Length: 224
Image (cartoon, rainbow, N blue to C red; front, side, top):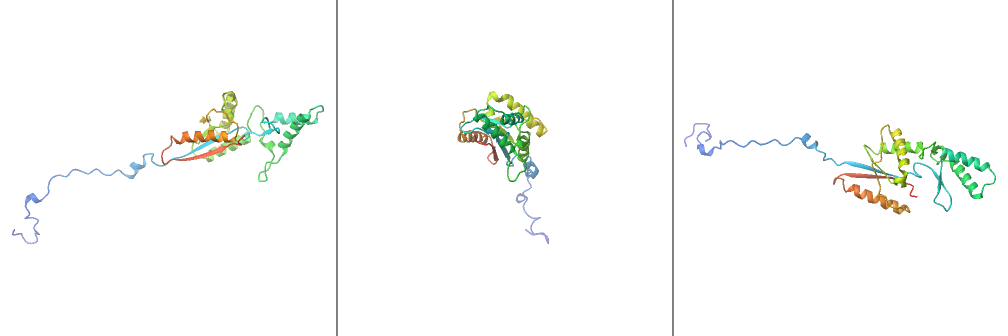
């Protein structure tokens, strides 16, 4: 066609060649803040498996026996009196001397004090000092760690002792505390049984985690 100067053919193009039809509007892609509002970030969870006897208190055992005397102010006072008494059997005297000796033993080379510092007082079955250290571990474990009772105290016959322990922990924690769960109520005769029981609980806990979540496990146990 004969185009005016500087037209470039645009004004003379056939109408059909110009796409003047309305185009569908495009939706804007979601902003970054939209995506980050979903809980897609991997979560880190901490589970603490807690034994009690030998962890939150000090027990003094007899050789060749599974029985143990609790290191508390009452037993310590009685043991001192028994040592001065006459007419005791050799076994009774040995047990009393051993308990007093443990109480006077230095804790470690890196910590001042003796095991008497971990003594239970009054009706308490757990050392206030050791319960305080448990709470420090709980706080260091991050937000809302899951605390699982793995001790023989999980049996029904120890329910009253567990309630008093929860009260002790609550006092140190500054808020009400209750154990989140217990390991399965099965018979345990050795450290391997305890580990197997904890492992089974970890397995069931992992089944409820997200694929990218991280699980940290803390085991506080003296393993019989």
